[in-house]
Length: 238
Image (cartoon, rainbow, N blue to C red):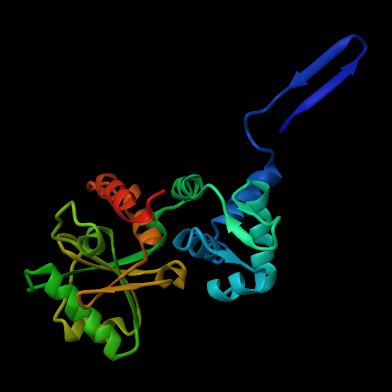
């Protein structure tokens, strides 16, 4: 049996309360964190005090009106948004972020690792950003290499960046060497281009938005949680 059950027959009483949500509720919850649907969450969490119409929210998230409608209804069921006063407004941003973090995995991104002769990671990040901008390609630094520009706390030699563009041209221009292990430059193919929403440019380097940065960091094994907590306290505020 799934869900809650109350039965009485022939002197037998069955009263069962399940702590687990029923299958349909679980499926709706999973859909909230699907690649396209999660764009809505990113928009709401990046602008937690804003009020939205459905059309404006769909446009901002670059998704269809129908998808936006389904996601907002699912969020309303969980009391994460309020629609009663003519505008869609986020409620409980901290709880929503925690729930998303529980259902998020950095391993969804395909990773390409390289060795570099550049020893200064900030200089490398600036060079990589400049190359991507010059060729109108998408880039966003994340994990510790992104946090170093936003809320520095943990120092790491590794550089992680989401990148969509001509990877071979980038590798040649920056003289990167592909390696099986031991490399410090990691180019990530994003599971969805929503990761580039509200990319920040800081000291000439493009960094993913703070929501995306937190999601990537929180379960990262190399002191990611420590850095995520600093980011949340200093920049997110919920």
